[in-house]
Length: 256
Length: 215
Ligand SMILES: Nc1ncnc2c1ncn2[C@@H]1O[C@H](COP(=O)(O)OP(=O)(O)O)[C@@H](O)[C@H]1O
Ligand SMILES: [Mg+2]
Image 1 (cartoon, protein in one colour):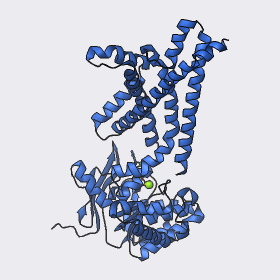
Image 2 (cartoon, chains in turn blue, orange):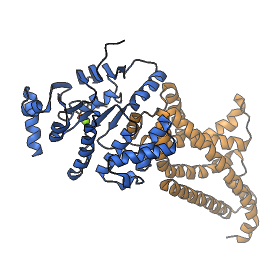
Image 3 (cartoon, protein in one colour):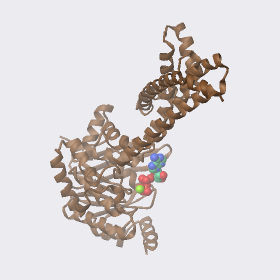
Image 4 (cartoon, chains in turn yellow, red):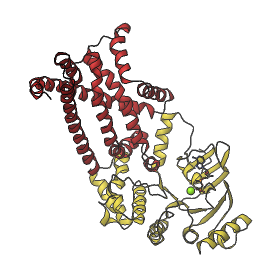
């Protein structure tokens, strides 16, 4: 038995690019069903931290655990590949720029991984694609290519694609930052729906209103450290740290 | 201009054109194969393979194809490689074309946005699954045209094998000049036939390019 009981646990995460230390000894836990928001100015290390969770950007120090299993285990190459591919199947990720596969329809984007990795039959996968795309309100666009969809629709397909793998955890890296303002809400609604279903989520965002309405907990990052964390009421209304207050003042002023 | 002579020798040029076509086709097949292998080496996670791939490209793009042919055909026997002129032509030109095609194929692959790989890997696909399902289908669309440019170049480069006496178009033209003293007519005839071959190959590339764009 190991002492691991938390759902997601990051222990002493450290990441450097050469001399540049991007993450400085970050520790963090997320419980099952919890929704954690990460805010902070550009370059503060939010994406790096998020991408360390599924080892897209491997840490240079520290550990990431998911549901009792260490993600960034030290294994020989082949074993590690097998291990990490299994871990990644359990973690959905949504990117700022959608990264839909442009040569596949919405349906194919959603069905590819379940067919390849979970051995679903074509019929099962089609049913799954219909369900998932219906869930994000895009059933009628199921046979459209990404180039035929708006940004908001693309991002909703990307979410459906991630959810089709039935992940335990969803990571969102500024899912609405690349969208025209009028398309943000449709994506936010999909994320809120996920929140209601108690999906565990870690959400990097620039949208303070959204963070404060869906997150159970918000982390403020600056220069590779978590400066302050707490419930959104405290972080947004009553932050203790000076740096948090400065960030919020600048950010909210800019947003208005 | 001596049309009568041109008409008389024309069938022999046609026969030679077939040799040029055969040379081109075999060279293209070998070149594409080596281009795929070269790309595989250059994108490998093993440093030794990457170095071999890089060396292959820089050696064969960095020296004249004619010298490569001469080394293979004239120098080969000295180190135990016995090839007839046609074989030496195909192998020499194929290896040369493969170096260019390596860069073309690799270029098309690495130009695909890195977000595509990230999205695929995030879903749990392996490196190879990602390459096969996500990267290659997209890069295929980008590589048909530039590979067409490589093929255009290699068809023209088949003229070089005249220098090792393969009886193809250029060699045939030279031979008839020797007996007729009509270089203008003979080279013109060869030139027109090259143009037709290259035109047809170009149409093929355009057709293929259209085909991969839709699907
Ligand atoms: N591949 C990389 N090489 C060097 N520096 C990088 C690389 N990726 C990110 N960084 C640096 O790491 C820091 C944190 O980046 P990031 O995590 O993307 O910040 P955020 O998402 O908060 O904007 C930045 O200073 C960025 O320039
Ligand atoms: Mg970022």
